[in-house]
Length: 257
Image (cartoon, rainbow, N blue to C red; front, side, top):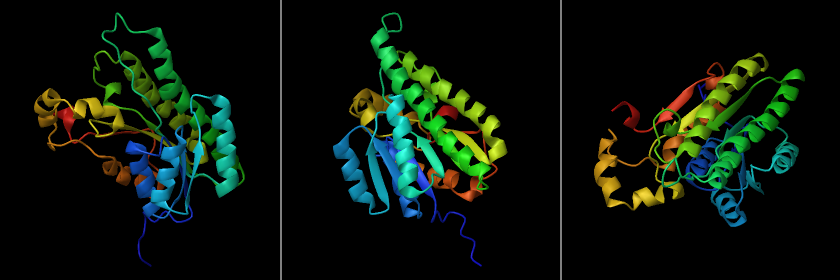
C-alpha cells in the first residue's frame, strides 16, 4: 500500500481568520490535501470570496472570536454541519501599536487582547470540549494550534499589547498540550516572521523597511501565506500524532541571523 501520510480526506479543519492572509494559506493547503474546511471570519464578503476560491467542501461562518457566545455557538454549528472537527487553527488576530509604551492607549490594549488572546482562548476551549467528548466516546485525537508571532520571543517596540498576546498564546498552548495529551489531543503554536499580509501592508510600502529589514531575512524575501500550507497539513495529519507542545518558527531564518 502506498504511504500517503498527508492525505487529509475524512478530516475536518477549522481556521479562524481563514478568509485571507496566513489563515487562507492554511485553508487552501488543507483543502487541497483533502480536508473539509470551516472558515471563521468577521467580514462576510471576505468569507464568501474565500469559500468561492476553495470549493464545495468549504463553508464559512461570520464570527467575532472576541465574543464568547458567538464562538461557542459557531463551534456547535461546525460540528453539526461536518460531524466532527479534527484540527483548529486559532489564527484570527489584529495589530495595534502606539507611538510609545508610555502613551499606549488602554482602549487599544484591551481591543488587541480581546481578539488575539481572548479569541484564541475561547476558540481552543470550545474545540477542546468537542475533542474530549469524542475521545471519551472512543475516538481520540485532534490538533489545536495557536497563532503567535516572533513578537512572542523578540522585543517588539511600541507593540507591547500585541507582544503580550502572542507570548501568552505560546504559554497557553503548552498548558493545553500537557493537560490534553491523555485524550490524544496535541497542541502547538506557530510563530510567523515578516509575512506579506494586509496587517503588514504599511511595512511592505516602506522603502526604509525594504532596505534595512528584509535584507536581514536569510531567504531575502517576505514570507507569503502559501509558506504556511505545509505546517497546516502536517499538524492536521496523523504524522504529527506524537508532536505536541512545540513552537514552530516560520520566518525564513530571520530570528537566528
